[in-house]
Amino acid sequence: MKIRASLLLFLLLISFVKGHSQSTAYKTMLSGIYEKDFPLVYIDQKDVLSKAILLDTREKEEFEVSHIKGARWVGYDTFSLVSVKDIAKSEPIVVYCSVGARSQDIGKKLKAAGYKEVYNLYGGIFHWVNEDRPVFSGQTTTNRIHTYNRIWSIWVNKGEKVY
Image (spheres, rainbow, N blue to C red):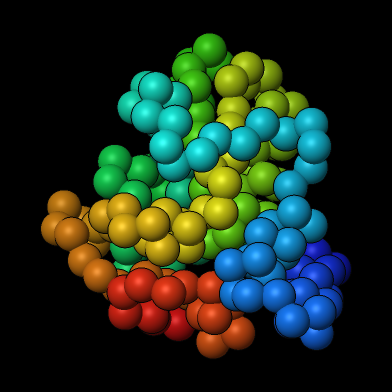
């Protein structure tokens, strides 16, 4: 995870040095995260999102601040396949985290365990919030979003940042 975080920060710095806008820098940073052979789902793909089980792969405190409605917390550092044993391997699953790095790792574990239809939410919950999509704390909508830490908070343009 530390190597991936270093790579992401490196891509971020290059983007800003080249004078890219925040949006372009964000897309450049995301392009460094995603593997070409791992499927992404975009927030406008309602057909996939409406049928899928949403798994939040952030840490518990991040999930408790806010999450996508109906998402189930599975964590990252504490993730175990036991937490998803009740999900049929044929069910569509969308994993997400802050930007997509942690969720991609969990998605690969799910695929290796035999889950057939696993997608990573493009841009994670940060992109979701920046596109004015609702997030929830419990069953109540909130404008709060856990940004992992102060450095990563630059990618969140909407809502109240918590870290």
